[in-house]
Length: 350
Image: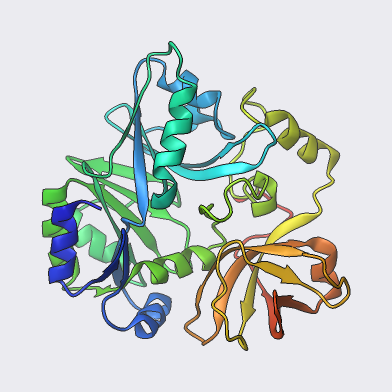
C-alpha cells in the first residue's frame, strides 16, 4: 500500500493490517451496511500489474485462460493464470489504460505471480511492473452508488464489466447484489475523491467488500488456494473468464479436456454456516459424515455475514451437495447450508 495513501486512510479512521483495511471501527455494522447502504472502501488488498510493450497482447494471449484481445478501454475481463496441470495460480480482473494492460490480483500473490510471468517473457517486447505505488483503487457500492459516482465524476458504466476512462480516472462496473463500482486513479485524485465520497457513503473495511464478491459469486485465488482449483471448479467459464477457441496457454490441454469430456465433479457453491467456534478461511476443508476421513470440499473465501455466521464460496463435490449434510473440518456442529448463487451453474453469464 502506498505510504501516503495509507496515512490518509489512517487519518480517516481506518484500522489497517498489512495492506488491508480491516475496518473503520465496527466490522459487523460495516458488513450490514454493505448489504443495504451506500459504502466506500479502499481496495489495496488487491494489487495491479502493468503489462506494456508491442508484444503484450501476444504474450498474455499465450498465458491466460481468456481471449485478451477482447479487453479494451471500455471492457474489463476475468481471466485465470494456470500452471501446466491446469490449476489456477491466480485469477485476474484485467482492464486497459493508455494501451497497457492492468492485471488485478490479491496483494499477497503479487511478487510470486510477477516473477513467474517475467520468466516467460524471453525475447518478447514486454515489460511487467507493479502499479501499486502508481495507482490507487476505491470501491463504491449501494442502492444509489450509480448516482453518487455520476455526481462526483460525471461518468457511470451501464453494464457489468464495462469501463469508462475520463482523464486520470477509470471507473469499472462490477457484478453485485447492489450497483457496484471500482475507481482506479492517481494518488492525488484518490485522496480528494475519498473525502468527497465519504460525505455520501459509509467507509467500510476490506472484509465487507470481499463479502460482496461472495454474494456476487465471484471467486478469488489466495495464497492458501493457489494451485488448488482448475478454472471450471470456480465457475469461471460461467462467469465469462475463459475462452475455448483462443488457442494454447499453460494448462490449456487439461482445462479443455475437462470441458469437452464433461467430467467436472466439483463446482463452486455459496454456502452459509452459523454454529462454529472457528473462523472459516480460504483453504479450509469441508467434510460429510457419509465419507469419514475424506475431504469433499475446499473454501474459496469466507466472510462474516450480516445475518450472523459466515457466508462462503466453496468448491464442493457435486454428489456431496446433492446428498446434503456438510460441515467444516473438525466441527460437525458447523453445518453448511447451500444458498442460491446469482447465476445458474448450467448457463454462462452474459
